[in-house]
Length: 82
Picture 1 (tube, rainbow, N blue to C red):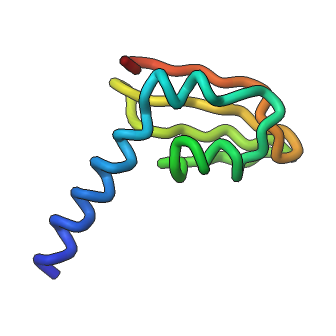
Picture 2 (picture 1 turned 135 degrees about the vertical axis):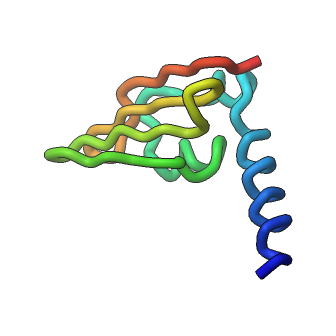
């Protein structure tokens, strides 16, 4: 179990490395969820309501938010990216 903690920390740090302005600028309206995750990794959380999906990568200090309709991105926003 103790070996999992360092591994989990490394995975979290690797995911945070994808939250950059350079990667954010690669995101485009019309991309599929799969295309977005190929650039910035798996979302920390997503909520789905009647054919729409809202996802968050990162946290309140540094993160990216995206909205999807029918698996196509319709909007992106960011906070705290360099």
